[in-house]
Length: 120
Image (tube, rainbow, N blue to C red; front, side, top):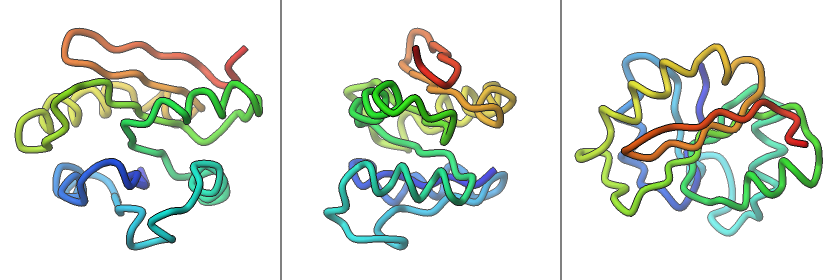
């Protein structure tokens, strides 16, 4: 699966996914100050999942009624991939069927929630 890592996360997240998925930090793909909708459109046009900590993506998906792209939202105060990377990776892989079919996955250390797209 292809993943674009949002600017609000460290480029080190690429290392978490490198052996199983193609993950690139947005800084390698576009402007550092690109609006979220640009990242969303990029991901939609390339069939890429967005990995982010920005809750605005869920709001944009709800407002636009897009059926893609999928978004994996990390809801944690701890964002260091060395600390939570293994848990995020495990959850991401468990949610692959949902991500392939269009979903907003909200991950935190206690639980995860899956909302299928489009969000109503």
